[in-house]
Image (cartoon, rainbow, N blue to C red; front, side, top):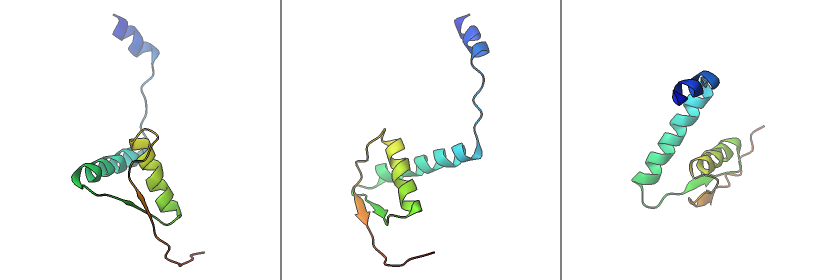
Length: 78
């Protein structure tokens, strides 16, 4: 009875395409973390690298135990 009342109160959560992509990315991150002994994340201070760090922090609940490997390509894109 309690569960039925709770289901009526809480509306269903709608997942967006972005939620699905984020979940797939976290799944890939989890698989890589468990498959390799020594893992590092490349970081070039770009948007893609920062998204990778954001996903890692989300997966590891606010902390990032994976070392970062800074790569300075000296290439500037407008």
